[in-house]
Image 1: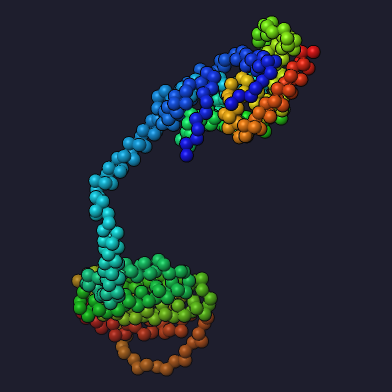
Image 2: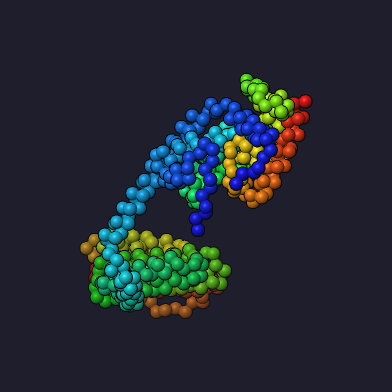
Length: 289
Length: 194
């Protein structure tokens, strides 16, 4: 519907229209049009690509999984996942008691590593490391009883590594807690030495040397006297023969009651390995057993 | 529900043709956006020129309108040949943004413009003495809404209903606005020709 206008208004409208149409056409219109149409071309190409991709994906999806199968996919997937989970949990539980040579032993070690990785540092991690070291000692004993020679060096090495890890963690703990960790570490080291005394002659020479080196360093970290090599049972020549430079065996003497030196702070209350170990090791070494 | 198709406007294709152009433009099909540009670019540019008074700025703003239209053509829903209304909606937004940013409206003289309107009807002395330049200035001097209704109704020839849709007003309000705009324009022209 149009507005009724007086003749003069119609005239005005006409003149205004003529004035509007008299505006010269844009000189830039062609350039603007060209730019715009090149954008349209680009958008058209993009739209075609996305359409082709979407169609391709839809076809692939419908080809791989027919509609009838989609209904049963979810329950099957959930059931499969639950079975896998149950198997993994069973393996984890069973592997807790696995000993060297058992197929699940590697699972046990893997879970231990995961446990260590997710344990926060400090006292907790020191405790975990010490418990792992204790397990290695048990495993070493188990291997020794069954003469599983190939396991000795590795297990001993891992036990020392766990002990040293605990000592490193203890550095940031309060004095009292650090002392407890150091005491436990020293006790484990002594147990390790006792076990190694029986197993040393069955180890390869290179492995035994590296163990001795690690033990030296660990005792130094603890500030304890380093046991002489022959006391540690790790000094021999290839073929099980004793070294010629091994010091002579001192004659057995009755134990003499000597007053204990006052304990100094930071030093373990445990007796030095030098005083407790080696006396019964030496004959075995000398005889080349 | 589909809205009633607007009556065809002067110089514009039929509603069906407009719908076809819009459909092609929306899918970036050849001939779609080209036709849209060819139909509406000069109209939008005139609309801009009467508001800003500068042909260069009118070119820039019109170009911006079509750039924005290209970006948002995917969201356009045709309600029966309403692509033009949609473009003017974008133009109004672009213009409002421009006016917000501009400190003042620039004025540019149109050198070389045709001069005086050929002598015709002697009953209106004002119109006889008026030049296009006077008319441009007079239209630009109107309040924005009166200016807009003069452009839509007189220059572009949109019917009341379509103008009302573009301006987001009722047809009655548009008629009243047009009346006030004509009165104001007459006064302004008298001042310009004195």
